[in-house]
Length: 86
Image 1 (cartoon, helix red, strand yellow):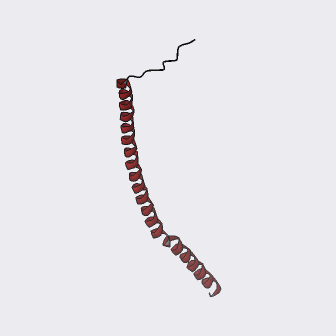
Image 2 (cartoon, helix red, strand yellow):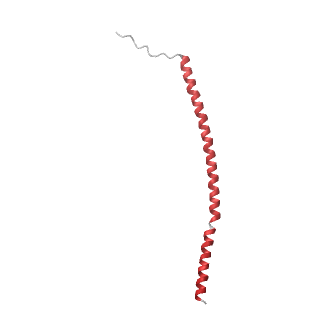
């Protein structure tokens, strides 16, 4: 007959140290996640600012091609008029 397996004994002090080590690791991980979240908010704010600036630039540039096209049409019309009415 074999004696029953006594199992593994883990002293309370060793278990406490392991729990403390895991808790400290979680605190460090939480601090890093908070830093990443703050950085993400900063990136979102800067991206929104860049997007707004690009929209303002695009809005202020749309008349330039239109004015150029209208000027070209007017010039062509004037040339055609001058050619047809000497």
